[in-house]
Length: 169
Image (cartoon, rainbow, N blue to C red; front, side):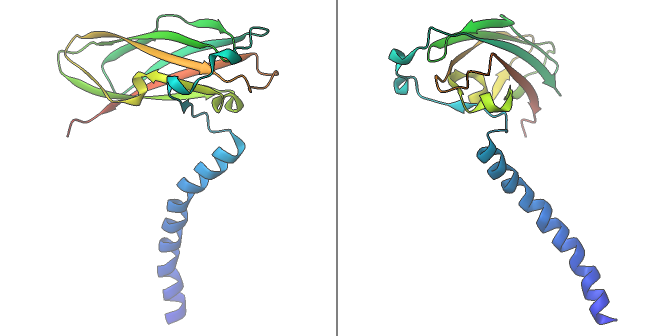
């Protein structure tokens, strides 16, 4: 009886431990396979602009969405043709539709997942939390580069940002 009770008590602890271990395990597997959709960050001074590949272009599409905020959020340009190795800038516009001060954080995602490791940002509103006063509108720049080592099979990249609401407390 004691052995059965001990086993029953241990099951929830083991399940919790397994669930807790899934987060770092997912990050490791995603990094190895390049399928995580997370973009990279690079310093502008680390970019060698002599490596621009003008022989090919990749279409970059921009998407925007909001979760838990009274904001509107959109890219000012929906798509652009880019040369790998060249720095580009795109603008997003955000507007607080409420009279209250609100706080949000943008989270990027790139598809296809294989392109994420080649999509690097030098400047992005997603690097910091954004605080908007009531009815404030702001244009926010995104400066990025697609690496020259990206596969020739990738002809289109979609960059999607989702702004999540944050509690000031």
